[in-house]
Image (cartoon, rainbow, N blue to C red; front, side):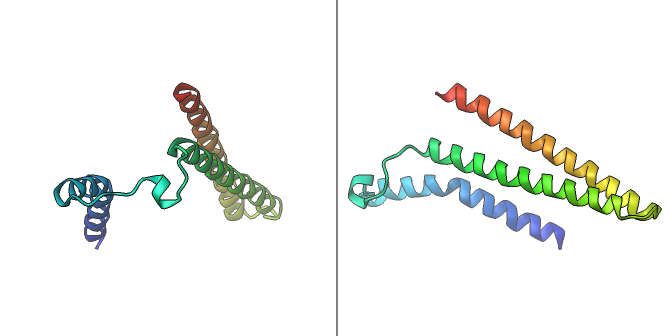
Length: 119
């Protein structure tokens, strides 16, 4: 079952990656004119600022979720009443939350670096 899911996921990824090529190829072969942004009424803004804002927003949301997870893990640790199994679960959740926060901060630094290099 896992192999089947991997196959379909890989097939979908390849399809998505080749879709622009197929569209451009269809334009060249069929002679269908793809409308410009002025003709469609869409924004002529570059995609870069949109993607940048989206990833900044996404990193903020993930960071907030990781921080909330850390706080909840701390509450579970405090309320464990010395139960070794619960204490271990809380410590593991805290460790995973800290790893998540570090990954989010690292991603933010990388995103800011890329942002400054592209400007």
